[in-house]
Length: 66
Image (tube, rainbow, N blue to C red; front, side):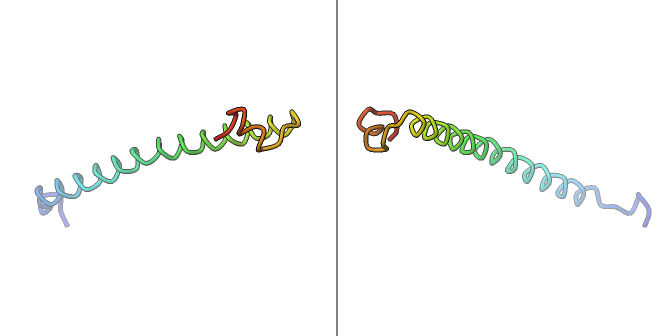
């Protein structure tokens, strides 16, 4: 197969498909990172509550956790 036998329109449509799939992956990454960061913050907050000696009910009453 020579380079001259490749259909330019077909190549363009394929590259457009690649661009769309990359955009989708980039959009999902920040959401995943945000969820992971939120989970880490919640875990750290629960550790601090446990170390302070408060119960979960007391922490909720104080507004430390929701």
